[in-house]
Amino acid sequence: MPIFGGIPVSESIVVTWIIMAVLTVLSIVFVRNLQVEPTGKKQLVLETAIGGIHQFFEEIVGENGKVFIPYLITVAIYIGVANLIGLLGFKPPTKDLNVTAALSIMSIIIIEYAGFHKKGLKKWVKSFAEPVPIIAPINILEIFIRPLSLCMRLFGNVLGAFVVMELIKKLVPLIVPIPFSCYFDIFDGLIQAYVFVFLTSLFIKEALE
Image 1: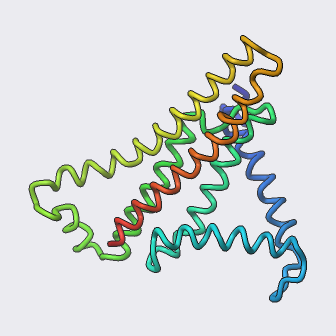
Image 2 (image 1 turned 60 degrees about the horizontal axis):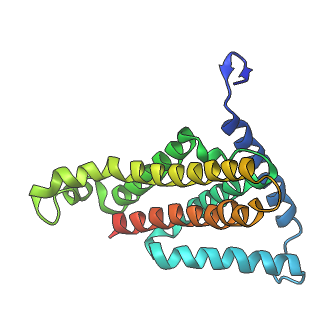
Image 3 (image 1 turned 90 degrees about the horizontal axis):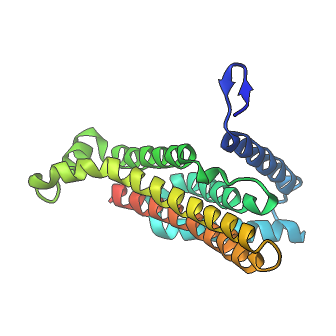
């Protein structure tokens, strides 16, 4: 593990920095010279894609949860790219438990903040005793279970896919791994990004109700 300024820096952090740098540059390139009335194909495609994703999340979280959609889109893009970056020879950051744990902790903070902001302190605390006070300990336990579930689901699937692909490449290193790579690196990677943000958006909606 490389040392930077006396602090050990893991590979997942370096790859995450690369992802952030690339996404930042692409964002700057894509949003340059945007017009109120789109005339170019680039802007039409960009608006269609972002508009479709925004509408998808809005249908889940509802009108009250629209403020959280930028976070959901950002996380979805990051996880999707992080899972696909294995195609370029990098190890996906999401196979690092620290990364998936950080993503899960951020999500649970957003989820609980959504409920607290919508209901206020008194109603937010009271919601843990609904529908009956006896299940309050279970509702409180969910605060810790949800991020653990999000974390381990993403980490387990990405790490499992990575291990399987490495084994296949060592056993049959030529043409055979290609279709498996299409599934594990592309399809499964995008599915895991979708599942993570979909569950997060559902939890946000539940917190707002």
